Length: 133
Image (cartoon, rainbow, N blue to C red):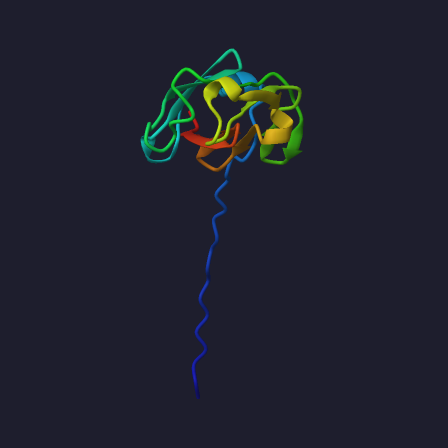
């Protein structure tokens, strides 16, 4: 007669905070670093300024460029916050900085997204991440 083995498994649910801060524009203030630490931005009073750039790859985005002004609102989904009524910079590799145009951020992807342990800020087509504090 074959014996029956019963295994009791307990599952522990781990809560992941995917919520957006109550005041996202205030919460994103400070330094943000892009992939491979090739670029950084600093957000102050909702103004996003490039503070470091890889000159070989991002020569068309000089340090000091204002990428966007994030002053709007509008949730996109449960973990993302899209900045409406804001201004972003439309930059392209074939344009000189004097030819950059400002466009609404909502059209160009100014979005704050919450992950379990970090935030991602996308503005003017560039993505930056940092750990939650």
